[in-house]
Image (cartoon, rainbow, N blue to C red; front, side, top):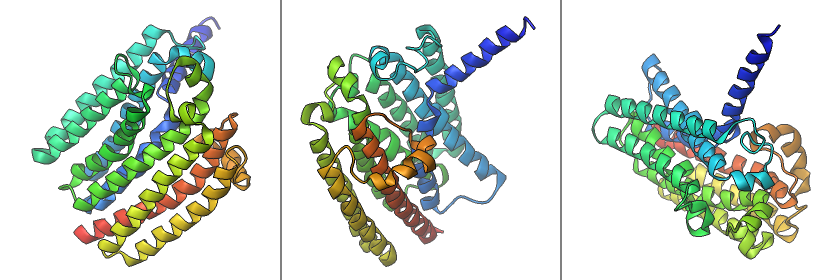
Length: 333
């Protein structure tokens, strides 16, 4: 029986280290990775390519995204004492030293794995692949770490997230299997701006802590209603550009699908703008039961409203994005 206590402590430490890497956030990069691979049109149904695909998802999910989340928790300890006191460090389940070991080890593994894959690919594709990953890790670090701490400035925080989550993921996934397709660069740009809009609204959850800590998020500066308006303008611009690109690429069916997605998005944006706290409450069931474990839940009313909107928006955008990636991939097969 005495050995059960140390064993329990070890298991608790492992769980805390895993929680520090925030597994829920890993899935945010997976659609872009899948889209980049599909749009390359070059992945083969072989063991070799499936292993490359697994390594890609490991690199940008648990390692890349996990690194940025771990660093963020470490440098945001004081804010998390207010916003999320149950996180591993403020709750005392991990010490600050253990947190440093967490993201340091993940960083080394990510760099080593990306370098190996880059050498395996070779040429310009290898340079693009490794360069993208290193750039993402660097931005992920300075996003949270002083003295730059990009997240403290709205002009840099959202673009940093868009670059790391929506842009380089597409390029890396494409480069892993083929030369960079011109259409993929455009899809990466669309995801860059979509990520900016979503991260702007995601700041609703930490409005109170940001205000106390001097963090100049858009929500703190202009309020919830205007933040929704700015985000909606960006999102509608993304859908409009997506539709124009689809038409120019000759993807007529996709063009009409994207326009339909834009119309539906505007339809649900109007009541949400009018009532930032309770708008589109009919989607709440999907948040609570259907997607709650994937996108999280919130006690902050504006953030909860954002989660409701995110369910609809992501389905519309990601469905059309995968459709586009498939069409692009077929074009190059």
